[in-house]
Length: 244
Image 1 (spheres, rainbow, N blue to C red):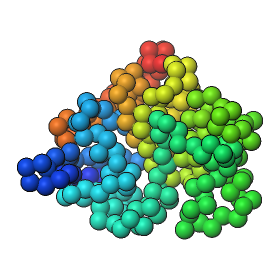
Image 2 (image 1 turned 180 degrees about the vertical axis):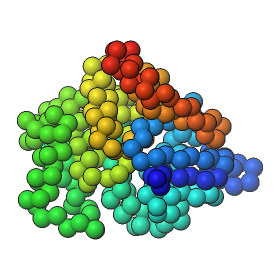
Image 3 (image 1 turned 135 degrees about the vertical axis):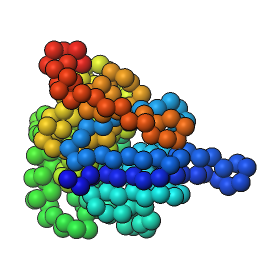
C-alpha cells in the first residue's frame, strides 16, 4: 500500500552563515494510511517545524515531502493552500474559531474555499450539520464559540477539520487547553475517527495523550526517532481503562 506521507532527508534551515539554525536535519518519516501517530519532542527539538511542513504552512530547505502521492515540497503558496483545503484538516490548541459565527457557520467555512468542489449552500449546510452530529454537537448548531465550553469548541474545530473528508487530520496540542474530562472526550472522538480509517498526526507534550496513538515519533535535535507501539496491547489497555 502506498504510504499517505513520505519524508526523505528533510532539512529546514532558518537564517544563513553563522546565525543559521538547523531546525530539521535529514529527517525521514513514513506514515501509512489509517495510522494514528503522535509527535513528541522537547522545546526547540524541531517538532513544531516538522508539523508546519506536514501542514503545508512552511517549505523545507532540502529534501522531499510527498502527501497522497503528490510532491508537496516546492509547490507555490496558492498550490499549498489548495492542498491544505482538499487533503488536510487542522485542529489547533486554541480552537481558531471565528467568534462572530455560529458553530454551523464555522464548520461550513472550508467548503467556501474549495476550488475543486463547488458546493451549493444547501449541500454545505447538510455536510456541516452531519459533521457536527458526528462529534455530538447536533444540538449546538446555532451557538457561537462564547456560548460553548472549551471541549465543545474543540469538537466544533474537529467537525470543521472533517467536513471536507480529508485523508489527513493534523492536531497540534488538541487537548492543551482542556481539562481532563474534556481531553478524554476529544481523544474518544479521535479514536472513533481512527477506527473509521482517518489518518491522524498529533503533536503533544503529554505522555498520557501520546499513549493513545499507535506510534510515537520523537523529534530530537531536528531528527526523527520512531518508537513503535504494540497496537493490540494498546487496545487492551484502553479497554481496561489503563489509558484515559
